[in-house]
Image 1 (cartoon, helix red, strand yellow):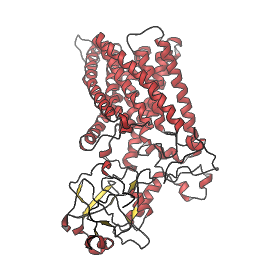
Image 2 (cartoon, rainbow, N blue to C red):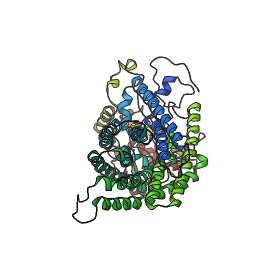
Image 3 (tube, rainbow, N blue to C red):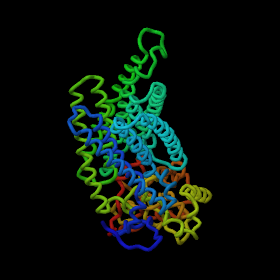
Image 4 (cartoon, one colour):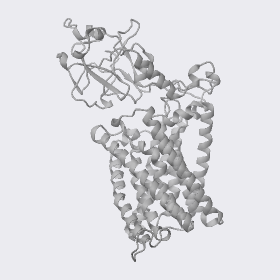
Length: 575
């Protein structure tokens, strides 16, 4: 692995130019992010599948137990690394919970814990005493309380502190509620060992929380489908994360069918009705049909995602999203296993066994590329992980003891920037020392890009196409870049892209300013802007010159929807 010696308390998150070639061990540990727990999710879910899969053979239970022990060791190791990260950089603890990328994966930590409880019953119940069911009951309710708090607290933080664009919706938006998605399967697994009273409570709690998780996930499905229909597929490197959409329907189907099978035991004969039929049998039928009702929805997303991944497989590079090859599809496999049991179908049982084999193969492939990625510095490296856009965070407090920013949280800094920006005029004439900022409207502001600056009177050669000069891996959002750094923010100039047209009619020419509320570009027609407010651009708007040079045309958009980010390209160096 590549390392370098570094000075004590060195700032390691300042990646304005590019990722360093050599880093120290601490530099790597502080970039151990929440998505790493997707590995323990995948390992734990694989152990659960191995413990439930049909068509078993001698030694399969032992193999599953080994996988469970490895998952437990891995979980403890990851806890130690995460604790070390927050000790080295305390401010990252709070910042990581609402970060627009890393914060979404905080739920993977709690899902990993739920899968460990699941495995504890599958592989440990037969070898423990009467205390074990009671311990599982306590752990179940503690987990449910924590998972509910996480689901409420994290979404509240995102609603208040972040502005995510529907054009960039991804299945990972479901992750804050994911810990509740596995409550149904957890309850169904441990119910056989529970007495009637506690078992009834677990049964009802499992149904309630599974229903909450499914409804919230379904709402996120709507945003994700809107993105797929109106925007574009995620980049090839992140397309494995599309498999996350397979999980909610899969785990819900598995949980409902599993709970339904225990309904005759824990639902009283005439709890709701006075008829001759046992209420538990009625609930069982209804639960099984509900699970079968949604299971194909999971398969539908599985095939949609598989096609998308195969279409971009040649352009894929490793990221922690690859672990989504396993844990969401484990939910689909568990649902298939439960369906095979209730339908008494050998064909479905064979399909479940085939899916189990595929999960094992994909786990080894992903683990190999993950280890190689760590060795090569593709992950766990400054500027290459999900926390690369966190701003101004250094080593602990000693390096920042004279810096007032060190005592402020991430969102306090953002709110202060927004208040300062809103108090200044967006149309204030730029000072002589500042340069105009030129970006493309297709950029949504929650994507972190660094915008290069140009002179206000930009011109272009006759017949040449001028496109925005943009480079990736910026450490600040576009709003902070324009309003946070450049307080005398001037109107943003835009230049033509393949998705734009050019017109000399002033009524169809636009300028763009940051919209802090929606974090999108706010379009204003030039005819509605006072003359003194566009003084800095008068030369480029009204100038007509000789045959060799002509004015850069104003950027006009064909429709209100922004084009995709892929339409933005860098300016040629020779221009």
